[in-house]
Length: 277
Image (cartoon, rainbow, N blue to C red; front, side, top):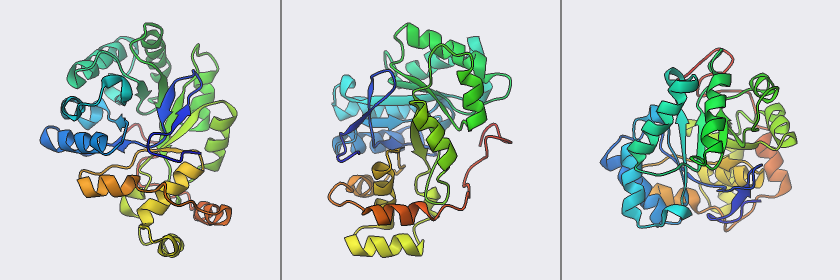
């Protein structure tokens, strides 16, 4: 279980990844991204998750540099977008992301969405980047079981991560079990359902018991169910608050109550019918 901001999970290739990080989706490039990343790193975060589609890799890279934290202590994730997929395009997209971030390597590179007819060629390119040591781990995002089965059928490197929409209204138990059985770490984007869970009565009641916010209870539920989580915020006090979840623990019953809120409700797109947001 993840019990501190610096605690890590060990991926299937032995690389250690922080179990808690900062997401920067819809964070403006430039000063906003730079300040958010710098604040997170200053307050103990060691994982930053961005993507070419977010169009803020330059600001993220600047925040990393301004933090003064040694590069090797920071776990940086980016993703290849849908119109960048395919073998050669992916190799070019990776180099573009590295250049914008101002980094020599990435810790994790993900396929952002399973674009039909392209994601296998994209994966071949990512295997090449991994073999060359340009990225420490490779994985996928928004992959359902059938996408993973298709990829696993003929890949040389198993995905280390599957980053998906995951929160108490969308627990995806079958996908989580599939990933666990194959050594693929599940990672949650939109862990707070874009604010849509903050008034959920069951979570409010638990939050009152522990004198915590509903957001903190949800994020603690993530860590106690072995899901890596990357809540997004641009406000320093919220970045600090989101991570202040390791001074209490939910009971097994409370974890089950929160998991039982699942209604298979998405705030983002469905990978079965949607190639991007």
